[in-house]
Image (tube, rainbow, N blue to C red):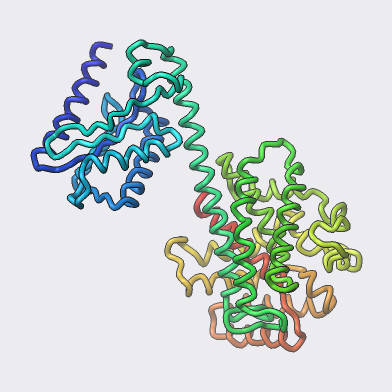
Length: 463
């Protein structure tokens, strides 16, 4: 123990020398340390908390136009714990003012009383606020008093700090994951509608086979839906029941609200009904699996199947998102297995997505960060063709029947097989013309494309 105490004292002396060296250059300096009772002063958990708080502090300083000299910053971990020291560039803000500003950082931080942001002026003197911090553990006496009087038991203090840090970091992790998932969902919708040209579907330059919607309609609808994506992800992340089906009522409530907002925005036009259904489940499942750190394509499929069980047979007639009988319900009654549509697809674990679309995306995209408009257009077009070729689109079944659907699937397969060759343009034009002549729009496949790209992006970051 004596050796450890000596190492801690030596570490603190080295820190003081580093501050003096900066003061010798007439520089104001800022440091960040943690108030950790006992030893060790740092471990993996404490270091993770320090790193997160350190990032917050740098962002905070920048927001107040307090410029630091990052080329001269010191970041290390020694016997005294985690330590950050940096000189502050001369921006006309006095050391006393900087101290007052950084006090606001400590006060606003959820665990701010564990943080010490110290300011040393250009003369090497510490700048004091004149305020005594309240004890982190009893919230009654000054922290210095409790420390000197050894008011609190060491084991309990360490346990409390560990618990609070874990909760803090998990909250940060949840926020980051849910933001990522909501961004991926919006990106998927925007890239799907922006894919051009598409057979029978709305794209950047055409309304396809539609007369009641265009590109702007889809952009507006996507913006309205986007505000719900983080809510669904947060629900998935926080869901704790051992029975996945307990999540269905809440998912239906959110889905109903999304539908209402979509129709209000589009004046009654259905732009994203299928996407609401697919992305709602996909956001929920992705957040649930990522929280448990076991997201994979296989775990996603297993969870989707568990959630939806006999969704088609038992729930199609319960009007999940509609007041009247849906096209999907009528198709199921008329065409049986082939007419299960989007609900049958999700009940089966999204086979079109995982067997046909995602393998295409994996082969076309080598690195998510290297994707650009051209490569995304290339990969999504090919994936869309594969989806149309294998998806029994209930929208087309309902409007045009089996013969037209089978012809569409065959033409799409032909175009897919020659994708990238000299014959592709001709085959793709045949598919486009077929959709135009028959006034059909494979909207179900477009929805599956969006969810395929969403799941692909999630897998790239979190698998």
